[in-house]
Image (cartoon, rainbow over the protein chains, first blue to last red):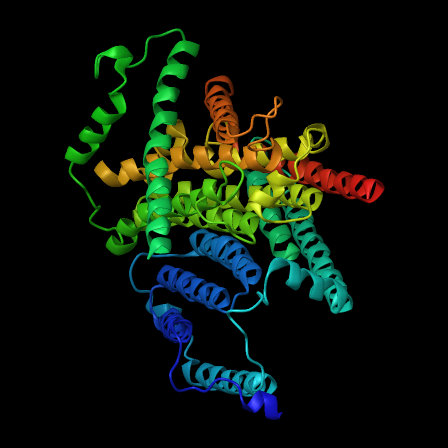
Length: 213
Length: 322
């Protein structure tokens, strides 16, 4: 405790700390706009800014591997999936007043509660931990991989099994839906089969992608 | 201060490469396509074999009026070309040309992840353009782009993971450093999968369903004119340079050559990249466009299993030789 208490103070911040704070503010602002904007696609695009800001924060904390994985998975795949879904359903240009479910108060309460809990737990857990930015890199691919596959192998494998279950579940659900529609419209097999198989394979693609995350 | 100058110089060189190489590929495409189709191609601009055709095209694009459709989402519409072009500039930073720190824009610990992650971001530009244009053809093009990206990113990542397993590192210079000649047959399937999936991500023929001109005009870019349209085209050619450079670095041994060329490694990298770019153009002239369902089928039933088999093979050989 005594060593930890002698860590760097909050006064006289370094350049990295200032940058961290500023990027954090931008991320927070983008996240706020994401949930308050009335334009659906704009919300998805502001989400890109928020997730990208998080990646920059990881970079500033020297966790390079995590930062790029964040960009790869969340911006490159999840946001693309969200945009795909929005375009498939309803994505008008301009405001969509019916997009508000009227649960603003409850949602705000849940969000604040979750944020307070998270911040409290994280601050309490890592109060005495300091990252030495000048020393050996603490978040390089090598270090991350070693800790993941030495100390955390069991949770990692358990998560893999969970994702595999989700993947199989998604396939089962989509195939059953297909069998139902085929049973209801037995004559719709002929010349329209090309278009339908396109829809189906796109949907399968989406489901599998979701499952593999 | 010396460090700052060096960083600035590196950025400047990468920027120059970014501005010139895509144009060289574009000009080569004009000529190669013309010869493969038994015609002359552009012959007049600049005098010798029409070498200045692309410059003339650039002047033409710059003179055109920049039209934004009345119903479009103006901000997103204007932002989209930049989002689609800038990622390729960032990726070029991390591709090593030769051995040592002098021949790469910036050495990154997780370079492989960096290039794949940032390349994926470029597609957001097409999606934004497709949605913001207030045009049904554009929206269809955007949808096809998204479906194509989701289908082909997985095999691309798996093939890249295979070569990272073989090298035992995810740093791009590190991967080339540990390259041996027998990796060529060992990683052959992965290389083909990576290259094909990359072509699909760039929406190059035969994977140009999202911009199929006989069906949806020009997909997500239908409403674009002038410089913004030129930026999208530039993004496509920059994408070719990046894809060929990456395939060279990951699978073809980068600066390694058969005659142990010391000091001329960068020439090998450039040569291999150029040959691959030629193949990209060749494929465009040779193959007809794949239909949308054929596209999805190719990815999910051929490329993904092949990539998984390649990973299994890599793992087995790695265990046997270690």
